[in-house]
Figure 1 (cartoon, rainbow over the protein chains, first blue to last red):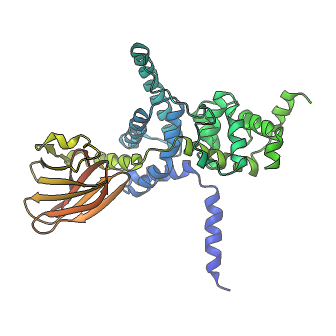
Figure 2: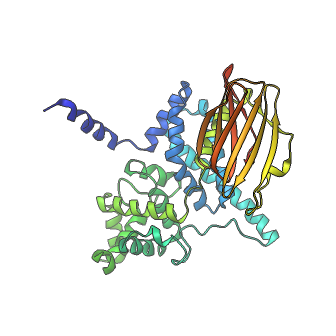
Figure 3: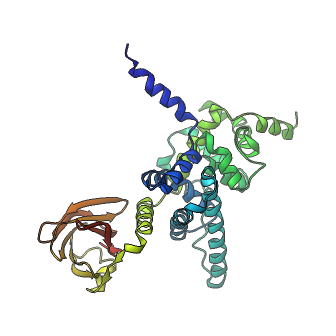
Length: 209
Length: 166
């Protein structure tokens, strides 16, 4: 038996504790040292989280793309001022959320004057026949889950939808960046995830599926 | 036990594998309901590259037919020629629509070998110009695109065109 088998197992174990926060910290440190490849990789894996963070604030699709791009530009422009690289994930989430909030408030003020409200998104709130695409519902369990998520309070819907974008090591950072201490997920479930679990547990079609 | 007490108990328990499964399913549903727009990651990558190269960047200026910069009529076969210029390079491209595909032929002066990248809908195609400065991209999808040209004499100082609508 060769020792070759040992290395991948070891790597897999170490990888378990690695979340976006760690990856972001390493990307920032590498970027300062002139190695930009880890930052490019981070853009790939973290942009979906930033996208949904900005969209959950109600930003329109064009607006949201600009905001997400500007968050990344702000990060590299201010990269030398980041004292603790481990706070990078938190920093980008808070920056994205605030920028989206400001942009949405501006466009709502404009919409109030022009009587159009295209920017408002129905993220996680649209009627079941519209979203998500029926093809995205892989099975009955997905459909039941979606119904229960939609019946949660809006703050919980947002929190769960965004925490879902990351792996376990990052649950707490995402919850805190969204300013949801009561609902905060990780290491305990927190109230939002608990509400969902209680509501699913009471639904026979969930336990049957 | 009251509803509130049950909730508090469930909330205080640790995240388990079923929670992780639930969140995993939810992630797929949220992504399907509101996918990240195609090309966003790529355009962020380009914006970051341009940020790094800020001081050396030569943005080309449109001197040709501005009509090419607007979306062509979907049913017609469009052909257009457009010229961009900077201090260090002049680039002429012609765009041909063949059904729903697009072909781009380009020519850069002064003549010499260039690495030409076409940034387009989330991916990058790369080609090299011949010694006369000619290059071509074929079988492209329609949509916004941008050329990044790197000269062998100064590969870290690319020339970037404004976005054009193919």
